[in-house]
Length: 362
Image 1 (cartoon, rainbow, N blue to C red):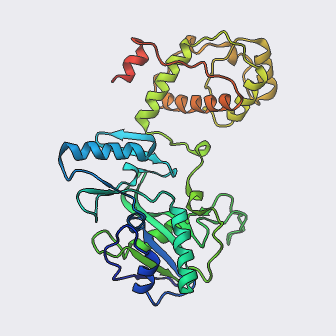
Image 2: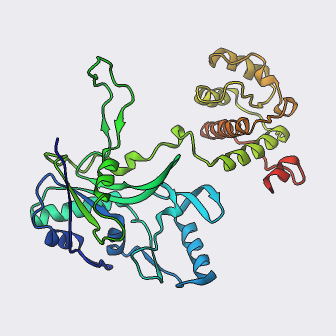
């Protein structure tokens, strides 16, 4: 395979309502079928009117930006000083929900497209129908990476090709069957396009030529396939946030006792759903019923016979911060599984003045 990465020059300033297909086709009459267009999400957002007005500077600007960020945030993952790592309503985890103040007037902020996959499909369809061009489209944006310094472009939306190349079931040259290998090829292509784009060069579109010989259908799931399912996310919170959640839940669980009857079968189903992912040695407090204990021992492999007879409040308090992190994660999994079975949570906020309450105030 031989790849070429080509800049699309001359697109210029993009405003709300602009026709991106016309701008790109005019600036790149040399496009071919099978090319991959890597389009910076900012010009997509501008064309779609995803702009908000804010003061140019001062505390008012910061306050307005915080309000916009709150509206774009589905949940906060981690917060350190002025830095907010959040999950957007699309499912992306990124700094400041992707809100951008570069390459735009100082009194405006650019938000991510509402549906980047739909934006990619619409641009691809317009180029095919009006210019007889069969190309794949990637809508990209810049992100940081956990555990690594520096930024790179990744795909927020894609049309005309699958987001992931799945090698599972293939056999390597040594005869080993690949079990886990799934390559995020659209992220790799987005990063390749960024090499010739950049924020200061005013090149918002790049073309990667040679990767595809033909484009595919638009029903491949788009870039949403890259968003890790919550049940498989082992790092859904920052360390400090997970530790705080663990402290709060541990204190609440130790003191929460409810008189309502609980269906033992529902509890067994919920615990079976999380038994394979909980931290070994974790003890969950349940109603002290012999039927529940017997059912767990019978149905959950390796479940200790006396585990459910213990109250967490009488167990030694964990002192290792990582124990608290693991405990908090396990407990959240259990609460979700119980809720799915219709079992109401008996966990309460830590009482005012309790050690956990004091710890949360730090």
